Amino acid sequence: MSLPLFLALLLGCCGYAWWRGGAPERWAAGLQLGAFAVDFTLNRLVDGSTYASMQVGSAVLDTTLLTALVLLAWRSTRFWPLWLAGWQLAAVMAHLAKGLDPGMVPTGYALQSAIWAYPMLVATAIGTWRHRRRVAAGRPDEPWKAMVG
Image 1 (cartoon, rainbow, N blue to C red):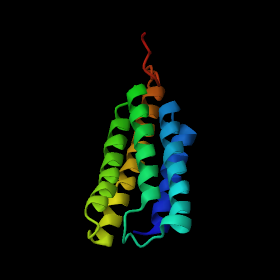
Image 2: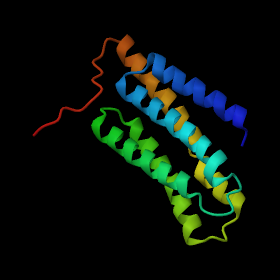
Image 3: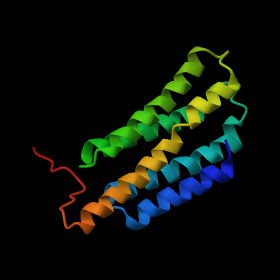
């Protein structure tokens, strides 16, 4: 996977969401940018980038991001954050699989734990685009569900 390609997608999609999105889109962009920054640092300073063994720091970070995305999906009126949470769950499962099978091929582990970031970024951009369409059409676009209780 190409780091320059991923960075272009990350900055393009998250920048668009931050600039043109509503609150859920901005939260999703911030969570993904923050997770990338922390994971990039973890891989360089702690876990290494060989994927020969389970990357504990990345697994903890991915589980934390999963929790945040589930909360975002639960509170948001948007549907697309559910997809983000689902793809993030797949990344967490890759860490679990490596932990259960330390003999897993490092390339397969690397691919399974990282590939899901690409559709997550695209979904965030599409969610932002759809938000902009609703706003431009003059339709109400409440960001959060009303809390009853």
